[in-house]
Length: 172
Image: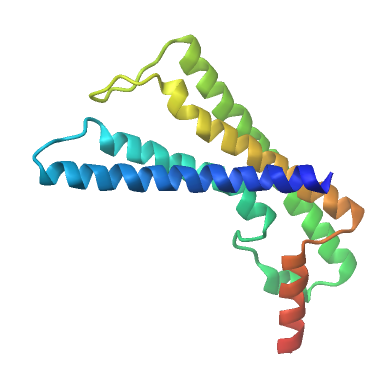
């Protein structure tokens, strides 16, 4: 199971990094093309869509590695039982919020596909193609939050959380 989870989170990071590299190459190509007096149509739009894909694909990996901003100073001051209650409350709220986000981003992409919506840019791109990375990234994040909730139920903590708590306790 740990291998599957590792590959799941790694695929999220690789998709995010790939979109970032493609976006960078596209921008560099646009700069080079302008030097020669050529314009790449809708390159700014594609760069924006790739930026959105980079962000959404990276959410699950950064949540899993505890790279999101956390209020560990507050959590480290709480007693064990109170800390568990606050963690469960936070993760439950996270499941509800990310589940809502995943559902509606997926539904939006589905509606765009059904109604054959296209972008209003120079190149008419079907919107569902542009919205799929956002929907997938949202689903990945929801799965990541559920995974963290299950780990919390088992009494497991991420290594990063443990190391942050050790650092805070050494500062006292």
